[in-house]
Every structure is written in structure tokens, then in C-alpha cells.
Length: 367
Image (cartoon, rainbow, N blue to C red):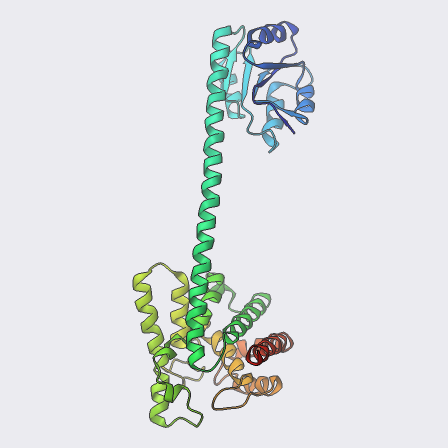
């Protein structure tokens, strides 16, 4: 579309006013005279002026009808429109302004007044355009800065979780898998309307982002316990169980320094409660049933499944089928029974994620 910053459209069915207006404006503006509202809309489809001077009373299409079309079209809606009319009643002026006109000038018009009004509205429009350009530029810069912060945040989360898993002789692929299991489970919950009311209040992106921090407390567990290849003694197991409290403590400390980070609230929930069991035999608080936060119940399934199919210092990896059988048997005791049933329906998708990521780990370890 052609853009003419110094072009004025003068629309009137009376040739006298067209000629008069063109003569008044010729020294300052390029003036296009248009004899009807219908012709105006036709020309607007090809050329966009800086401002429109529009007569109200015209045959075929009135100025009021024409401005409705102009304002309804996103391509022309921002063009300033000044009504020129012989109707001086307040109600007519109010109607014109309510339809989107920026001004209302009565005929016969004063040349100096017409010029001054046009100058004023073009200046206002120019300032408006400059402000919009500034706002658009500011929005881009804010979005870029936000993206930089998010990338840094994600990198720190990944780095922290990999530090923990490095000590645990795992790789970062574990947290990637857990995140994908959670995403699959969330999708199935949405499709089946399971816990829909509660999930609808979540910040899903922040929840998924928080998942890698669920075992951050392991960073405070001694190596001789964390990496022990034999079964832990009762005392050692009690020490290992403290990682959920260590995790919450570390995340509380972090949240004191960077408050209002939603993902840290989710991270604390996952870190502290993902070892609770549906029947109340879990830790640290022995919560039972739906007293266990839903996010932690979801993480429990994802985390246990991945632990089962992964090799650890103290065990060989189970097959996908063996792991799903163990998950199934734990429904109603270790795991939320409804979530367990849903998790089992995702068997094929979960196996694809597990197989793909396990392959990556083998490649990484061999390289």
C-alpha cells in the first residue's frame, strides 16, 4: 500500500468545496479530491493518506457510513478523519466524534482555521506514531532481555541438576526424560480432565522448568552413601532420606535471594514431597492420599520409572516392560491410583522417550 505522509484526501460531493479546499491546501499539502464516500473507499484500498477531510452529507454513502468502514479496517483505522459539514448541532458533532473522527469543522470553513486544525492533528498523529514506534522498540528490548534471563535461568537449573547427577553417576539425560514424562502425563490429564481444576491454576512452563531440581538436596549427601554399591544400612538410608529436607532448605535460601520466582515454589514441592507414598508410608512427612501435593505425585511416577529403567551403582536397569509392571503394582500403595492408570496408558510414548534418551547416554559414555 502506498504511503503519502503529506497527502490529504478531501471528500465532498460539492465541487465548490472541493475546489476551495484544494486551493487552500495546495501550498502545504498534496490534496486528492474525491467526490463520494464510495470512491473514497476504493482509493483507500490503493493509497493511504496522512489525513482525511470528510463531508457528512453525501448521496450514496454518508460520511458517517464511510468512517465506519474506515475504522473497521485495520489498514485504515489509524488515519485521522476530520468531518466537514454544514450541520452544526451538538448532537451531530457528538455522533461524528463517537464514530472515531478527531475533529468537526463547520462549513463554510475559515482557511486559516482549516490549516491550523490539520497541522495540529498531523502533529498529534506524528507524535502518536513516534510513541508507538518507541513502545514497539521497548517491547522488543524487554522481550530480548526476558529471553536472555530465561536462558540464563534454564542454564543455571540444568547446571545445578547436572552437578547433582554427576555425583550420583548419572547424566543430565535423566532430568530431560523426567521432564518429558511429566509433559506426557500432563497432556493425558488434560485429555481425560483428570485433576483439571487444580492443574488449570498452574504455570505449566514453570512447573516443567522446576523438575530438574527435584533431587538438588543430594548435593549434601556424603559420597560413601550416595555412591554405595551395596544395600544401605538403616542408618545410611535415614541419612539418604534427608536429601528432601536439604533440597527444600537450599531452595528456601535461594528464594530468599530471588523472591517471586514461581518455579522455585514448584521446585520446593517436588524436592520435598516426591518420596511421599499414596498409602502414607513415604517420607519425610508420611503424607497419605491426596494430602500429597499433586505435583509430587506426578513426579513420583516419572522419577521412579526412570530410576527403574536406568542403571545405578547399586543395580542393573530393568526393561521398560518390567518397570511398567512394577509401576502398575504400586498403584494405590506407592502411587496415586488414577495417575498410575493414566501413566500406564502412555506406555508406548514413555518407552520411546526412554529408549531415545538411553541411546543418547550410551553414545555419550562411549564418546
